[in-house]
Length: 206
Image (cartoon, rainbow, N blue to C red; front, side):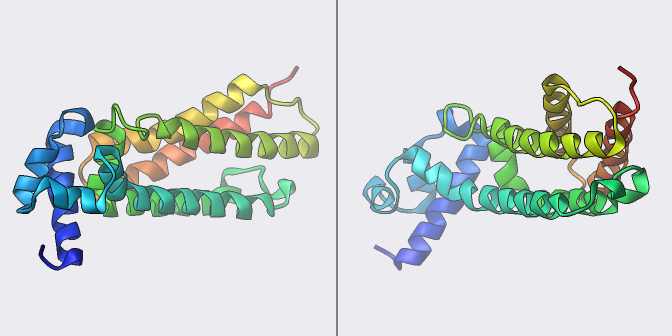
């Protein structure tokens, strides 16, 4: 066998190409090994099965994205609710959205795999996880803002909808816009729109 590090890297590069072309379900381990110049035995030396191989291609960027989002949400909890009453108060959210877009485009192929080619793997519903995390965060933030402003509490349906809309905005850009600069420009507009709607909901009278 070649140098183990080189062999594993060749397998991962070959796998990424095969998964991008055919998706997880239709990808052939035989083709992956052939294009990497190794036997199937070599593949099983490094990876348990096809899903383990797919995970080794996409898991690390996915973990890093989750850490980015989680860190931002934790910092946001420390901001006094009184400072979250106008668009100007959400500058850090705009910058974080652009940072997230930049990171996703830095790992463009891996996120294309997750978003469009992961059917049949454990990653096919990972978007739901990000929605769930965002939903829990927005529930906390909404309750804090409503209490500070003395307005009615937002219901769970609207919190879920806002969380979904936010995550879907990133998914749509990555799956429809190939140019990173254009995506960065548009995510700023999109987030301003979401924030304006978010703030407007606290003005609704019971």
